[in-house]
Length: 194
Image (cartoon, rainbow, N blue to C red):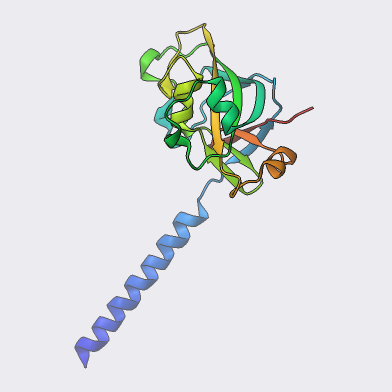
């Protein structure tokens, strides 16, 4: 009987300690601040990041120059796509033409941009940069890159879209945004601004 009382007491204490710890962790959570920008506006990425603060994109800026929604057939023809199996589930492609600038990031190859993290959202819809399509639309084939300080470069970020998940008409009438960081500030660039 005495052992049972001790076991119940220890178990109760463990549950109580666990509950206090869960409350403590959750009450100190810092949620990201949302900032919204218009296309054609140069946006400093600053010390914001996607996964961890070691990404170090500080000193870089992005400017969305143009967007275009094309069918997958137009994509095949424009970029001479031979291996169409990679795009079997794609119905159209949303091309986002951007300019990245390294204003004053001095870290060289140890820091830069990872386009594999970039995503578009449109209401509840979310999609990442398509790695296969990226190799067709850019002369620079790697999704990760760094630029020399004081230089800039244009890129096209392609997002392949399946009409089952997001019909073309709904996408075109929506408000797509390019997400360029998630934390501590979630930065989104409106892609259909006036």
